[in-house]
Image 1 (spheres, rainbow, N blue to C red):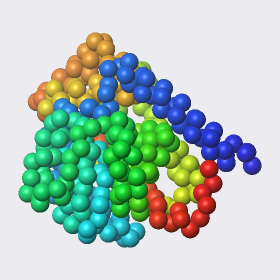
Image 2 (image 1 turned 135 degrees about the vertical axis):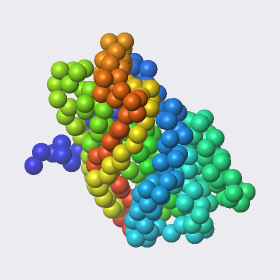
Image 3 (image 1 turned 120 degrees about the horizontal axis):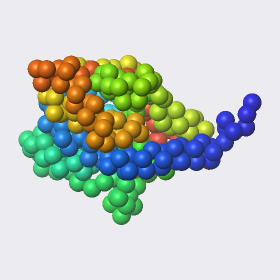
Image 4 (image 1 turned 90 degrees about the horizontal axis):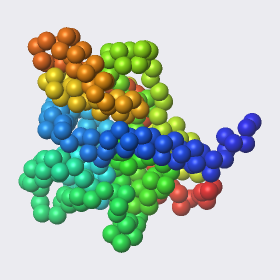
Length: 297
């Protein structure tokens, strides 16, 4: 068997190199992943707290509870809390929540959504997690659960270690297994590239393999999920241009013209039906079990 398969240092380097390249390309395309939800914060909030959104949240929380996570009187660090899609139900279950979020429109919605809780039950930290000094904040092994759902903060093993540093009992991380598919991007892709759209695997594989190599105890679950929504043409144009940037394609005048013309011809009403979905991975890491074994570093 190839020894590189068990070489944790090599896997860390490959993940970091790939992530650095992706981040550099996004910056060159003018994309800030921490602010990519700003323009659709209100829509995201509505979808998170409608009946379907609450059912999705309930399924994830029920899975956590089935693995032994308890929320009553627990301390939870929610990294990338958005408008409180999980912070709110965590607090409703009796947890004390520290919600980290940097997007101004999402913070405003988060403040509205937690306004009825007792003072101090939900604390909002409006700072990028990567800029936070965990030791200075007193967060070393402080939280019963550290929760990072689809957060761009997870981009290499170093970022995972920082999150794990905050957890006393459990750490939950969710990521796409494949790049999340967007129906409009798949429709427009051949017009921009001349080729059919092909889904690509994401960094979830690095995360799971490194947890395995380093001796962590964890449960994981991969699900297929999707949703359909109707949005105005202008918002659809913004979304597609952002997605093209994520896929390393130039968000230039040529491609914007192609997208705008396609939307005008295909959706003359100005209302665009978008389908999003893919396979998503969830992993719950059991930090309290680490004391029973010596980790292999």
